[in-house]
Image (tube, rainbow, N blue to C red):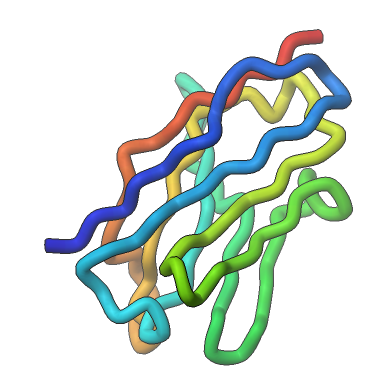
Length: 119
């Protein structure tokens, strides 16, 4: 059974930092790209960052470039999202997801963790 378990969300003031973690189990970590999505009520879910461990490629949505960093700890099967210089518009539920490298859809999802940035 595949599980993705996020942690690290919370309340932070604008300009502050948070680090989200997503521990993956039940899958072969090296066969998947990992991503972080966020969603707020009334808006579509947005891919924030993605990392392809096999090719060390990363993607960031323009609004977080230079502020967020996605990384992995292969020994722990964990993906992180370091979020710096947070803004109120970063407030959302953040979820991690796993994408099998040969597919375009996202195969597994975590339950999500709330990030709230106060002004």
